[in-house]
Length: 118
Image (tube, rainbow, N blue to C red; front, side, top):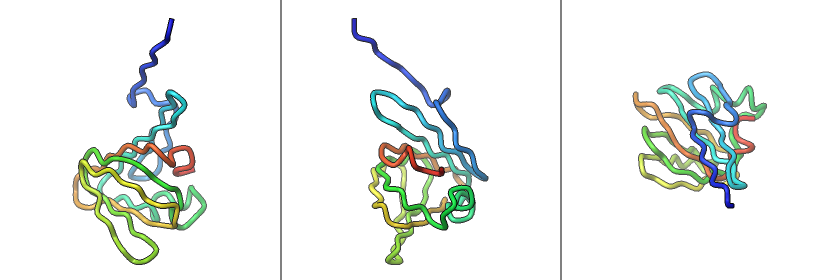
């Protein structure tokens, strides 16, 4: 008999917590999926870089924004706004990110999860 596996982010396999945010990880079907939840005022270079040991994030991301707004600030100086419903790919180049506005930001990550915020 085939086994169906159900999991939920309410009981993740791992949680990486940092000031103003957390990254929850679920491993299922050979994939590692992440859920990023950041409070207003969160910024990668301020709240994650010290624990990650690098000044900027260099992890490649593929994901989808569920709620709130954030940026991806790229090495060429461009700043891309991420909004609810956006599917995104961020290349593995050093980049910063921060929450825009006063609403919490939540996104799902399908690539780059294993190495994010480590």
